Figure: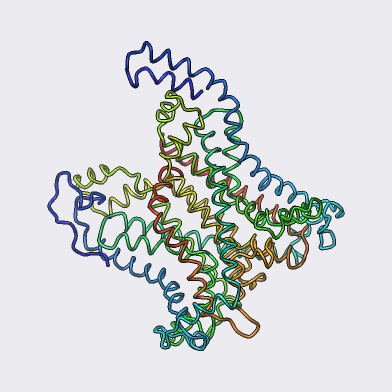
Length: 334
Length: 304
């Protein structure tokens, strides 16, 4: 296919006289073409092997495990664990029992956390990228500063925040209590209801630069003539942002929001470093919850069932989202 | 910070503001300048605050970081930077992280180059299925793979004696779960943006398909490859979940090892901050040096 395409394009291209060049090319083409039937597959073999080992096999095993009674007794030989059918799933979604109730709670916590985090990251990312689109003194420096949270290893960043949120020696309480006098006492940030706030702040801090990076890359694709033409027509900068920049970001936004949603919903690192393996109830994100059910309570079967439910939920949301956004796009573009 | 001296108002035709990257030939109104100034100042404060805490606390003696927070350190000391290497075997963790992240980067880049070249340049059965399944793995929660990989590693170890569990090799394989799909996805876009005529011409000149790939396509796609490598290295360097379950004392990476500064009675916050800074500097420096490639790579690959 590629070979023939190039072949058709070749004559008008170099235009060295169609005669000898073309004949020589054809002679070289044939073996390459014969080879190229198997070649793409050969090139894919390493990727396929690793994908198989790293994604397909674990996923099959994971789904399989969800139907087994897999406790610490069967870790050494999980094939021997008794088959339990849908019991693990029933346990996970029985919202009147403690296990199901806790899972439902952590699901809602994760939804709230994801909604706030994605919204904040998107707003900050777009605003920063739009404001840095134009050249001014210090732009490069600001850009480097804004990208630093994204580059920092996540544990270094989150540990620093954990230090800042310490009750007695942290910076946050120093500002709020000692300097501004906003609270009567020094609040705990990593325990109780405040932990949700702490978690969200940290997640926004380290995730928004990704939105910034993507939007910044997208802005470079907007043709400059658009701005110039609109300026000649008398459009101010605010109008340009509203009528040119933001609409041009639309297709990128759709991908960006989806990626931010998936990452945030699956976020494990932030709560794990901030709180350890059992997060406070107000900040019990679903991946920590599954981790705890599996590796702390040693119930891998239930943990797997929860993972599978989580995956189904994410698949559903992604499918609905892609359907909605692609329909919207079709209607618009004509 | 943001200069108020806007480009001269002379315009009407052609020339945009200085530097050629400006957006509009008109001087922005003050409402825009002030919004920008206030927004950027607040955002900078938010971003810089933890970095300041990290740097300043790493230079304080233990009694200062254990007491009330001080904006300006009083007893400056570089002691924490010396002690971090003794309190925990930081050098060993550093080495482990370097080996694991480096190997994961090399593997994912090399594998992705071949796969992306196949997808970008050839038509074959199953091409669409392959790209879609690669893309969709992005959405899978890491926790979904953690449990099975843990069990597989334990069982493979028991039955064949290959020590996947607790080994650096096993960790490298798991890190490909994050970096490989992204690398393939982004390189496809990047290779697509390299004109086909280039490698077709190389083939006409006698290169085989692999010759064309390595002599023409790869050099032309260097920014994209650098971007992918940076991303792969960063994710592996910062990964916590798999590292905390799949490593042992010998193979522990920085992500897990840093927790060692918390003892029963006290957390050596000054050392924690010093160590965080030390492990951050290489990646942040590398990232900031290469970030323009990352933006270029994203522009060609992901953002279209």
